[in-house]
Image (cartoon, helix red, strand yellow):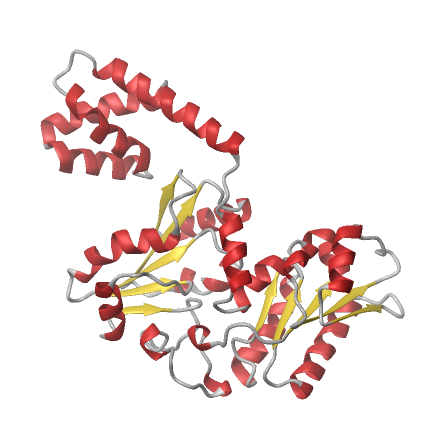
Length: 363
């Protein structure tokens, strides 16, 4: 049995888990998500769950719960089963000697995506210190930093794709592809593009043709690969057609794992930059708390807790309120709530408590 622990909040989630809808029967998948999970990620995970009952979701309300923290809390229970393999997507680090030992022993594997390795176990952190062959490169072995060529399909993404320009540096060369119908951008973005990058250029579509900019970018990718074989390429677009370029580079060129298609500059840096300070800054900023959102969650949680206290008052279960409320809050489905309650309190008491929990949720 192989269990995949997947960061459901990550950018480029669809690329990361491509192919799991056809996964073999001996594989199961657990997505970690939290309150600020992008809406399109939620929709995508819900669709996967509707067609595969081996896909489960662990939801955390608190923005302080991180994916590495989730891994640290949960990996040990899978290691108790000698027949279990654990795969973590995407690459993450956990400061825990036991975790590192299991990685070194091949019990835990760390991959960039579901398809990133033809054989479970070839993408683990025990290999990350080795020098690499560009024709067989893995995500965990990609060098941190380095020159990045950022090709922006501005007609497709507009200003949404320029989010993250303030993270650009002199190591980044940017080309913005546009047409005559799409010529305006915000001053702040343009200021960053022209002053923070190593070079900035704009290429205008000479004549409007179907998929014209797509072909411009595809040709430019080929030119970059020929001239700068050790650099990285980020295509900024929401157009899934560019994944054909990504697929070709993965399968047939030495550019494997050095090219990404993402919806913004910021997400592209997270997925392609390696272990750099600016990548850590972006991840830290995404963990920032929205006060209004957190206050709404707090109010909702407090109301549920008070309702639970009201229904448990005068019952033998009042002293167990925190444990019961924990099950109500964190077990993601009614079935898992019911199972967890029976496991914690036994059949008879558990059924009584579960009926009270249902009243709380219905209130």
